[in-house]
Image (cartoon, rainbow over all chains, first blue to last red; front, side, top):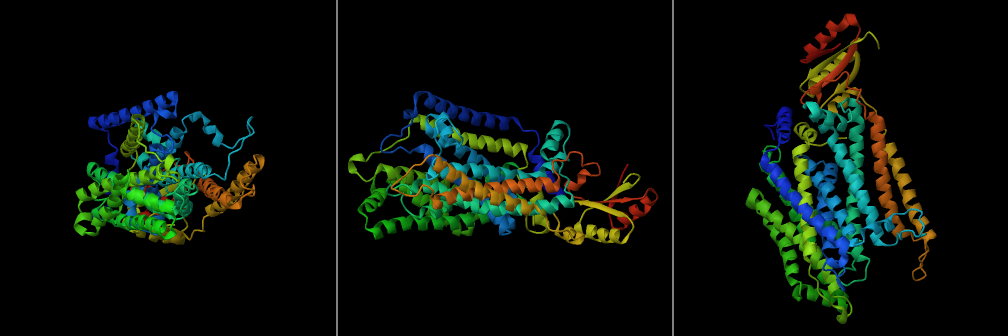
Length: 438
Length: 168
């Protein structure tokens, strides 16, 4: 990073915001088409009913809930990187913090869509809003699903505000280097920020509190998501390990998605001097750590099933390895715990191609982890006569495709229209090795 | 401050700013503010700034959030009594989760309100004595002087290694 200067950081980031070429808009258009496919499938489901999906007794929770948990998980590493690593003063997070935070905001938005999709009669979402109504009904705050409503909306609000606050000095920097309409837009967005010492005095303090508040929040959000399952008495779900297990898994998948996004971003936008290999290597090392926690959680589940001598739990976990969804289990065990261990080899974690491939594998494995947990539990419940299998319908695949396209669509728009690397924090890294040091 | 002349010294590193601030302090010129692209410890230490009050807004927000979260959950359960297995209608443990989330949410609202009120943003008119280079690679020290003292102030900035910008 020694070759970087304040001016070169500004120039590199501003170059990324130059007028997009035609192929950029072509990719955006393809992704938008994918979004339309998802929207069409959802619209079809709203008209014909939730039966358009493959969920049925006993598996009432399918890909909608899997994707919900998957996207909430993806959202977690953004806050890990921006808040938790900020509190630890880990300077290596600075080049990737902005993109990871943005990823968080978009992923929470998409995650938040899935409960709506899963509702079927989506307009009945108003039942979850506490307001005086003619029905004289009030939400039941004993239900983990209501915890979820509160937790996810809080997370979306907090992460958006945190993201915008972090963006403020950079918006001012762009305002000062733009002309015409762009200058007008960024003048409004930057709210008159001038970097005066009085502004920094309050800003650094406020940013520190943001990080301090986001840290417990991020842990609580995925714990709450895990309680959607753990508070039910379904075999394979009803366990106290779920909260830490889900939080670790969320960060694991989120870090993998950070690599998946950062590696092409680094190449396309010539960020090699800013997002150095050391940064990617540090993400890879953290993935090894979270992968080991996740692997430990997998093993603990089996141990507890055996140790409890509960025949239903034992059957659930026997079936997980040898039953109908065994491939899902092999994917999750292999992709999430064994493959990341390859990062223990320096050659692998410093080669961009292997980093990218392994990040995709971990994303794939983490999706399957959610499938195994969510579908596996209800498919093999207490009564053998109520056992049943589940396969997603085409409508569900369409909605899933739409969600992935929507995520990358948003991210692509962001990368070209806003600073995808925090110029301010990069400049601080040159001077202090820290970020918004309060 | 009518009749005063405003001059900004633009520097490329913090150490120059620190020495300029010391020189300004010892002079008759009136220091206004420093604009910088990053929050600088050295500059803040030289200016001997008080701790920001943003935290108080955050704290008040957090306390209000905790009370509101609990109050909402209690109110809803009292209004719609769903008795399960004879358990208490007001259950503190699950309601703590609602209280916790609201604590964070309202603390963040408090934090944002604190930030906006303390930094006085949005403020689109406050850029009168500002140089756009200050968000790039320059640190700008703004000082005011009497109309007859402008040359002295310019010299002070130039002697510290800065460029000059005079505001009309």
